[in-house]
Length: 108
Length: 120
Image 1 (cartoon, one colour):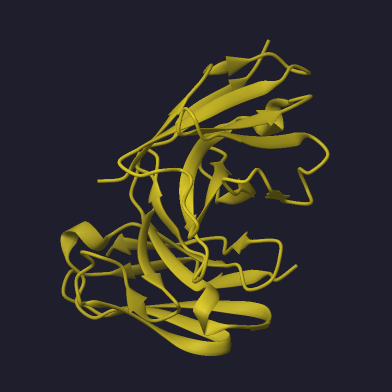
Image 2 (cartoon, chains in turn red, brown; image 1 turned 90 degrees about the vertical axis):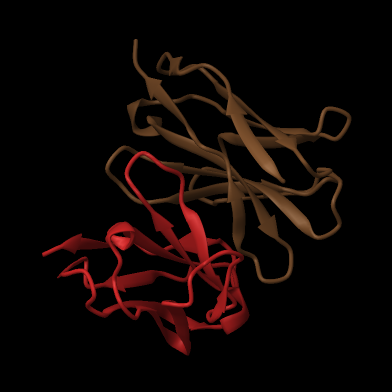
């Protein structure tokens, strides 16, 4: 099983700042099968990025994904008030499908 | 626009069976390009994949739950369902259904989720 480790667990930033979230895999995986989600309180997760770097429909371009092998990154270039949430990475390049533990971006 | 909606009891007794249904609207569940999935999230915790089903009925499950899980599909109703047997308090969670893309393997969209509490 591929374990996804997200860091930091919590990121305290101000609106307008840049957020960089890491997702490290225990084994190398295909960039094609790495996705990122955003979850706000009381809501279902929402797809942000698939294929490690492709934005989902309707996702603003301040969200970007990068990485390969075992190290992947989600970057939010300038935080908007609505971006404060929990973010999860997910892989299904290798069964079983797994999620990272989540990373919270909170207002400083 | 594709929408998914979970339905089922919000309270299940310990040792009994949890049963949920996901109704798909806005697209056919008989898609060659997608799986249909269940994911759960204990309150205040992270996401756990439960399993997936293809319209043909083929399935894949999380090994940690495999002995207790059955996911099935009813193409005539455009629905798929989850059965989880012998539940305990540890199965208390928000249960989400979602569509999984066959190629890039991402979940989109998700249902709104339903809270299932296991308690006597």
